[in-house]
Length: 223
Image (cartoon, rainbow, N blue to C red):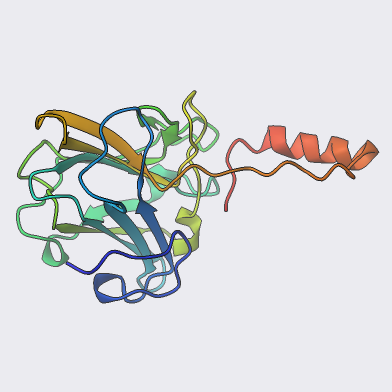
């Protein structure tokens, strides 16, 4: 397992498994009101690396304790892609032993539909990776997935969840079980909520109308 990454998203280079990384999300914020994992974050990192033409490799690393385990991992892709047309495969040869997921899920084929998968306390995501429980994906392990589609780029995963009544949005999220609380706690973690700055007061008239239209039209935005 490599050391914890120090930077947030859009990391150009890192060490070890993430040597050629272009986009990295550090999940260091518990947002559901549950119990955060032990120690200081990041507790999980998601690294998206260009893996040749038409292919992006996702590496997920867990820095939780060995007794804490991950049951769901969620992430997004730009709305120019229909996720059901994106190949999504587990790479067992590059993953820790015994970490085969139970399910790899993608949103519906309609690119205008809401993303399908909700994280408790946040919004909706395009992709979800499911694990059954302890022993499937625990702290200290890593898992690797390959995503493929014509023209796919690692930068297209730098995309936020759709609002769902929570306190997000987030680029990625995960559900961690067996967190501190007598061994029965759990919590949803993300890469920290995005703060959307207010426009300067100088915007007025037609410029303000255009800006308001863009904000309403774009339910999600690339950072």
